[in-house]
Image (cartoon, rainbow, N blue to C red; front, side, top):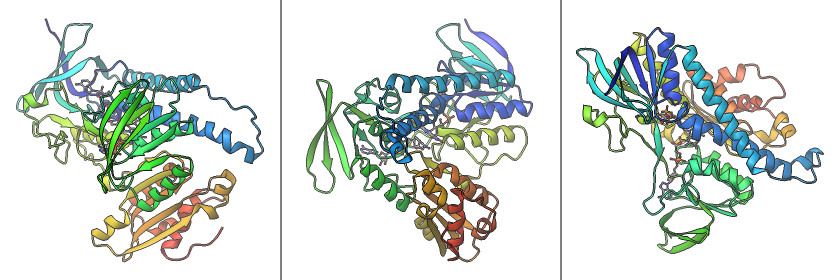
Length: 477
Ligand code: FAD
Ligand code: NAD
């Protein structure tokens, strides 16, 4: 038996940042909207097992590390600092619970009907402007929802290596690494990208000996490499070990430990390493299992990403896709903006995402943040560059904070002075980058940033000094 439900203008499948933000914008624009989610709570990867729990643990672990090593310098003597991992995890879980419940509240407030279960597109027909999504869960008979449009926002899942099967206790994905019950003595991180560095930092700070094994010859290759060099040096100082250009080839569980075998790519030498926990963070892949895309003929690329046109429409009219499911950086704020844009397009407005200004942030210590082109990318595009850099070392506020490693770099087009990119490594880089994002959104120049007021003493003054440095006018503060 199947239960039929009234016609909607839009059914959004997936309630991550792309899906829930898109659904809210659809509802704000007067479209009758439903959202379908297979997991127990709304919010997707980001709220449940991604951005939010990782940042909660990064914050707690940084405070723990500071209380061990830095507070004394401030004249605060905490003679007996003790880690309570259970409380740290409980705090993280509470933050996640509050935020995911908040999404349920937002759905109700915006009169978006929520269907719990796996959503499958069983019919899509542009001519009749009618499609059907079937929702299946354990509790009730399948529900058939009629809709004019469907937005697929089913996100992504971790990639897996055949010889490192996740058990989420000894061999973990990011999800398992966010919920470990005790601090591993040794931890191996396979993949030195964003997740590897962020979650590797969490456990390193809490007492693990973390070794990162990375296939490439550099960490985070899409980020500004001068910034990444500062981060790598700082992580090495904290005790993290990096093995670059190495390929993990096998693993064996030996008692309470996992032994991995890896090959040094340059020398061909095979080595072994043991740890209590191995985290695999070798990237994520789009998730569309059970969504019915193949059955209705939706086109994907070789990586399984759903192909869309400039209006986020797939090759099947009326079926749209956004977020981690489609090409582009796998970032929550990118998914959100695509959700807003597709809602506006469906309402007859000119929804648009300005991809060159999508910022990315690595929430390590120091933080690394980036927007726009790197020097290499800008040069490859044929620009002649004027580059200004300024260190946090000379900034009064950074000195007062006691964290002054790193710098701001502004890359401008030499001919027009238009800002092409900005890269920051240092305190609160993830917050500071937005000044450059906004300037770029308005087509701003380094002169615009340099002439804008910056309150003293703030970290933002370093952004201004870097802008002044584009024209060799920086001053020492
Ligand atoms: P998702 O958030 O993945 O949501 C998809 C939802 O669809 C899920 O809830 C899933 O259950 C549901 N779903 C799938 N199939 C179906 C179906 N057939 N029927 C019903 N429901 C379905 N990004 C940042 O910008 N900043 C960060 O700091 C950051 N930190 C991260 C940390 C970690 C550890 C991880 C893993 C990711 C992090 N990300 C971060 C990436 C970010 O989480 C994703 O880019 C973002 O969640 C993508 O949003 P989305 O809406 O496309 O998909
Ligand atoms: P990633 O793409 O950032 O890094 C994966 C790394 O693994 C790469 O450096 C790659 O060279 C390496 N690698 C791949 N295969 C390997 C192998 N067999 N052996 C050793 N190294 C290997 O992916 P991630 O860190 O898993 O993160 C996934 C996605 O989640 C990213 O796209 C990122 O955008 C998103 N994310 C964002 C944030 C943030 O914005 N702060 C935080 C976490 C995750």
